[in-house]
Length: 149
Image 1: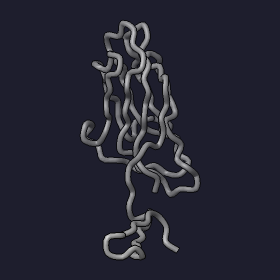
Image 2 (image 1 turned 90 degrees about the vertical axis):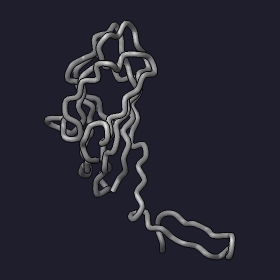
Image 3 (image 1 turned 180 degrees about the vertical axis):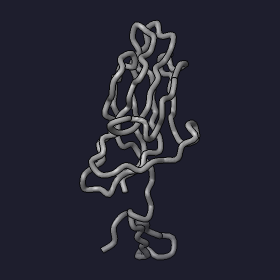
């Protein structure tokens, strides 16, 4: 039995079906989304826990969008990874201009110069705020993108 997507060609033959194994075609999508992350406070926020039943996942992008900003002058410094250092996917990165409402930042392999990275089953991928923003308040929605293997 085929797994994955099924494409039907109804132009020439309504019965012509082609199966594509989902293990062959992996399209990045949203792995997790965390709203209302306080960017003023140092510490870790869980973005995604790789399912135990998978063989791992590949992270391609982490996006931050400011959802609340009050007198923010300097954005936070962040890193992304797993225990104990939280910097395997993205090392310490200053987001100093990420201060205005609805402003966003994409931390992907093009922007950071790093390759997409694989994590193992049950890994807990976290956003680590190493230096809090200078603001009365600064909050963001954080989205992690990639695919499970």
